[in-house]
Length: 182
Image (cartoon, rainbow, N blue to C red):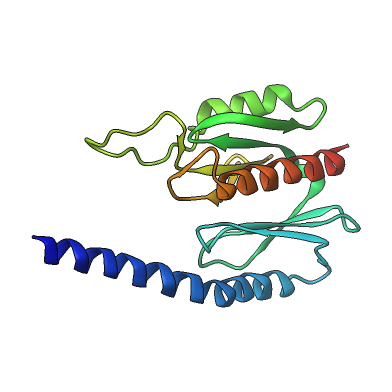
């Protein structure tokens, strides 16, 4: 039994090492997807912890680049961006809304469920554990109104640096989006 536990721990550690080593390659692939968009020069970009999602801002063109897994990046005019929410384990902890778009976002929030992290079955979790921090961009689009970027996608405590960095990044992006939405 002890041997199996040790093998599992080693396998998980190796998986984490390979995931970390592969991160620069994933970031380069996401950046090249952004670079392929004509007339889009991002001043700021954010790549999700999941390795497949992201956002980019081009304030000169007043546009946002949406990065989704296994797709080319999509350009969205800033006039179509309604707002953004920052979530911690499915609970909204920050929000920015374009003036006059409150009722539209309220309707979209009703249709689109909050991002809820997977819950552990049978585990006892501490009250200060956090599993996921996400930034959700709301777009004036009836078919795909939400674009989520996971800033944190693993269990940490609220006192951990990873959690504080993820929330700080999300709050920083809310400020940047607020500037663009004015």
